[in-house]
Amino acid sequence: MQRTHGLCNGINWFGYGRDDQTLAMNWDYIIVGAGSAGCALAHRLSADPSIRVLLLEAGPTDRSPYIHVPAALIKAIGNPRYDWCLLAEPDASRHGKVDLWPAGRTLGGSSSINGMLFVRGARSDYDAWAAAGNPGWSFDDVLPYFKRLERSELGEDAWRGREGPMHVSRLRTRHPLGAVFVEAAEERGFAANADYNGERQDGAAEPQVTQHRGWRWSAARAYLGTAKHRRNLEIRTGFAVQHMMFAGTRCSGVVARADDGSTHRFELSTGGEVVLSSGSLGSPKLLMLSGIGPGDALQAHGISTRVDRSAVGGNLQEHPNSVVCAQVNQHTYNMDATPWRMLRNAAYWLFTGRGPASSPYPHAVAFLRSSPDEPEPDLQFLFGPFAFSFDERGVIPYLGPAVSIVFNTCRPATRGRLSLRSANPADPIRIEHRLLDHPDDLRRQLAGCKLARQLLEAPAFAPYMRGEFLPGPAVQDDAAWIEHIRKTSFLGYHPVGTCRMGSDAEAVVTPRLSVRGVEGVRVVDASIMPSLVSANTNAAAMMIGERAADFMLADRRGPADRRG
Image (tube, rainbow, N blue to C red):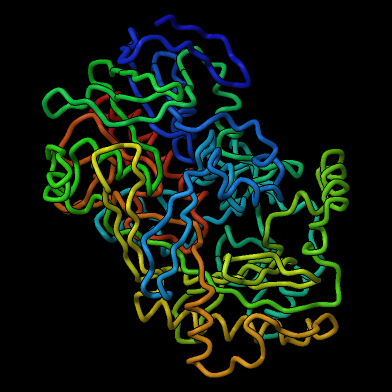
């Protein structure tokens, strides 16, 4: 196969030849998945011109305006061109509801279709990782990597970075009711917080977003924008990895299927590594298809067991979300859904980077305690100048001026599992997760509902309120609230934990992210989290990519340089 270095829209394009082709070049690192962690890793590894890096992405390029216009994310999520659109098994904790589990399928991965919130999580999240047998992952260990990745407009201090590739900004246009929400939180006894990614997470604040001048700033734009011209980095879209190849216990490369149906083998150089960065739903699937996972389940599908590891696909965690909505007497973004207003707002955004088209959902964020007895915030609240309702089709926009408060349990106790449906890589992964299965999660969501109502009933909101409509004033007792939660709760789109790191024998990867039981394979994405952070997961996923790069470069230099 002829190798070229010509670039088209940041991508190196190759002609496809006969089936089952083997590329003549061997690679030092093959990264499977160009998501938040994979892009960060590709950027850092390829900064050394002596290292040959291949980045494979199953999805297409990221040229669509659905990706780059912030408000257009509703057109990207659930769109099979950019989203894997995975469906879970019926959830018995919510009357058999079947959820869509989005997962980015394009350059940038889920950072190209997410809500753009930049939230690190609390110090205790990472200290808990370290205490669970993961040295090098405490908050003090990971803070330098958070600082290294960000270019924050909030300023540079002991907590923030200014020189990284990822732009972190305030909203270019903030709806005035966002400030009212912060005032309402203060009236209910909660503090305002100028920077929830700073010294403390507690309190209500203006959101921080991964945008630059009102445009989405995905991991692809941040990390591949500068790296794509490096001659030692090849970026290939439209290549879905089927499984890994092995020579004994050492990984020798991957087999991938191109969009045109042809099959390709990509081989490692001596001592090279395959890095799975396909996300919490994709990386365990590739491990299992390669014979690494629960032995009995693999054999039932006719897959030879290479490493019997029951933890692969287990430990699935997700943020349960609930919502309270109210009518207001102010213009909100529900009213901008007409063709004329969308066209006008798109034009205004194109020339200014401002207006409703630049807006993600939340215009205020708060980390609050469900009760005074909680040692730290256990609920995350998002306030938006937009509201929605529910019918037999699921979530639908509300027709009229309205606002909503969406909230989640920061550290859910519920655990789910992923498993293969068959040995066919084209079959989607089976997702079994009961979002409200653990009573502690349901208890916290109940407390969140009541607190959301209290915030909307605070004096600050009084001049603007016309009345709550979801669930509505008829819902007062706990039983009615719980029924509302079971009927309307939804995912936070933050799956983690399915390739858990740890020092114990059952952990899938080591604290340096090497897969136990084989050589030359690492997992670098949100799946390695032992526990879910109390935050949106995009920032943490990029940090994991940054941290892994240092591990891998140190290991490449030799044992004497293996620090951290």
